[in-house]
Amino acid sequence: MRTSSLAARDERVNWHPYTQMKTASPVIPIVRGEGTYLFDEQGKRYIDAISSWWVTLHGHAHPYIASQVSKQLHTLEHVIFAGFTHRPAIELSERLLSLLPGNQRRIFYSDNGSTAVEVALKMSIQYHFNNGARKLKVLALRDAYHGDTFGAMSVSGRSRWTVPFNDLLFEVVFIDRPSVTNLAAIKQVIDVYAEAVACFIYEPLVQGAGGMLMYEADVLSQLMLYCRQKGILLIQDEVFTGFGRTGQLFAANHLTEQPDIMCFSKGLTGGTMAMGVTSCSEMLYEAFYSSDRYKTLFHGHSFTANPLACAAALASLDLLVNESTQDNIHRICRQHAHFIERIRQHQGIGVTRQCGTIVALEPKESEGTGYFYKDQQRLYHQFLSNGVLLRPLGSVVYIVPPYCISPEDLDLVYEVIETVITQ
Ligand SMILES: *Cc1c(COP(=O)(O)O)cnc(C)c1O
Image (cartoon, rainbow, N blue to C red; front, side, top):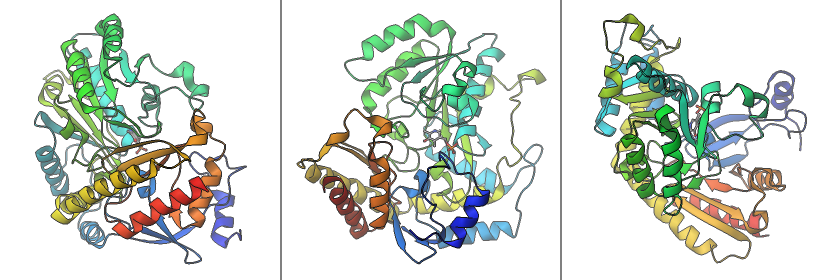
C-alpha cells in the first residue's frame, strides 16, 4: 500500500484511539464525506457501514445540519452555562423531554458518552447522600461498556483493557445479562447487596462494544422493576441505543418500566458535534433542590450545552422524526431481517442476531475466540479493499448504518460480508 503524505505526517504526530501504534497498518486519510460515503485522498469511496463508531445518523456532511450549525456559529458560538442560558439549549431540552419517557424532567449537558455516564453516577451516589444514606456500590452487567473515563470504566466489564487500572476502580457488583433462565439467580445476588447499592447501570437491549450482545426487553423490564422495589436507582445508558438504533426512537420505547436517569451522546447531534446528555426524573432533581448549598450537583464542563452542538442536535432531531427517515429505519430493519434469514443457511456463518437497525454475526470458525479472534484484521482490511468500512469487534461483524443508506448500498454491504467471510 502506498503511504500518502497525509498518512506519513499523521504517523509523526498523532496517537490514535484503541490503536497499538507500532503494529497498526497505515491510517487512511479521509478528505470528504457525503451521505453514506467517505472519500480518501486517492478518491476511493467507502460505504460507512458502522456510522463512524455509531454516531452518524443522517450521513456525512448533511447540508441541513451544516446550515443550522453555520447559522448558530454566526450568532453565538458559546457562552458559559452557569448563570447564563440560550435558546438552543432551552429548545433542545424541551424537544428531548417531549420525546423521552414521561418521568424524565431535567436535562444536564456534558461533552460525550463517558461524561454523560459520569454525571449519572454522581447524581445517583449524591442522591442517596443528600437523602442521608451512604450507598457506594454499583450494580452493572458483565460485558458492559459505558466509556473510558474512570467512573465509566469502573462500571464497564473488566477486561484486558482495564488490567492496569483494576485496583483503582470502584466497587461494582457484576451480574449476567438477564434472561428468562437466570433472572431468579440474579435477583438472589441483588438481595445480598441491595442495601449498599446506589444504582443499576445498563445498556438496554444491546451491549454494543461488548460485541453487540442482545437481550430481551421483557426480562429487562422485570429486572428494572425488581431493582426499583429494592431502592436501587436505574441508569439507562442509551448512548448507543438512542435515536432510532433499535427501530424505536429509544430503547426505552420497548420497555414497560421507566429509568430514573438516562444517558445520551453518539447519535444525539446526528454525529456532527461532541455532546452528552444526562436526563433525570423529578425525584432525582428534588434530592438536589435545596436551600443547603452543599446539596448542589458540583459538576460542569467548560463546553456545557455548547450552542453549536445544541443546534446540531436540534437539526438532527428535525431529520430523525421526519417521515422519510422513519420509513428508512423501518426499511433497514426489514432488510436486515431478510439478510439474516438468508445468511443463516450459510456453512461459514455461526451465530446471527438483530435488534432494529443493528445486525451482528460471527464466522463459525471463530466461535469462542471473542475479542482476540485471529482474523479480525484480515476481515477489516478485506472489507475496506471492497469499499466498505466495517470494524469487527473481535469475531463479531456488525452493521450499524446511517439511516440514509440506500437499499442498494445496504445489499452491497451484505454481499461483501458474505463473500469475505465465506470465501
Ligand atoms: C460509546 C459508548 C459510551 C461512551 O461514549 P463516548 O462518547 O465514546 O465517551 C458510553 N456508553 C455506551 C453504551 C457507548 O456505546
